[in-house]
Image (tube, rainbow over all chains, first blue to last red; front, side, top):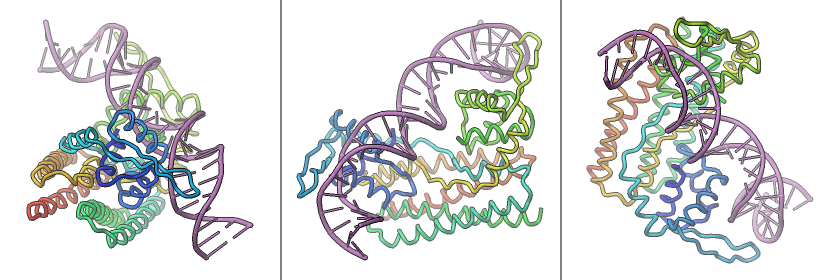
Length: 169
Length: 169
DNA sequence: CCCGCCATGTAACACGTTACATGATTTT
DNA sequence: AAAATCATGTAACGTGTTACATGGCGGG
């Protein structure tokens, strides 16, 4: 239930609507999660019934009123408790890696295509991250960006070595 | 449905039982996936009804007979088609990153604890990977290991920089 | 005029984990 | 005697994605 804490954590910064949260996630945390409306809205409803957030309807001109959620004391407590706990370790769940491992019967040419594709993607990711990093104001966000950039760089170096090895083999 | 291809790909190497597959995954691909019996057996059943694998029961002394699965021509075709397709890009879905981003209200001391914990974990992972790498015979497995090691190293370097920044702040 | 943004929500489906159920054999 | 390994499977549960449903407003 990690989207629960995503929502709680973002609402701790400022009150938001479900729509706001979605936008925020896409803009700032696209490297970490993709949270869709199908998750976000039900999560907000659940947090509401549990008293971790509260809602106020804000009427709008010509539009149905929007629901602005804010975190409660209870929610803050829960968030803080979660933050202090060590994070669960997770895997490198990359489809590309699996393919590489299973690619026993692929020709070196085919393999090379895969690797090159991946390299292109990594480069694109790099550019996107660099662009995003220009628009950053808070330090924690910069940390996350740096993390993503580090991993991206490591992957590109590894891919380059792989290309050399496949070329030789 | 990426476990489908995991199973197909492993069976392309040699016929195996569900139990064998589980062991193999744990030994060789623990960095990439964790595939449990609850996924593996149903996946095998499904592949069987679809004709991508076939099964032969091997009687055993004192034990119920085991079911050895082997890939069919159809299964091989499907596997090859999948391998040739570019891999879907995936995210850095790390709980630790999320915590870091959301840790606005945590004291530097608390933050430091989190970072140190993570560093310990990364070091443990590094050691485990190095140990595993000694027992490797096939090159593709070595690639996967090198990938995991690269990422692990990048993460440790980033963590070290983070520690410095938190210390200063 | 059409497209994209604002804004909320639900339902069907897919996927995966955990725990349970069973039971003999080999190793410590 | 206890624990781990071999070996198969199912059911409940949790979580998440995709697609659908709805509709006004603003800019090109």
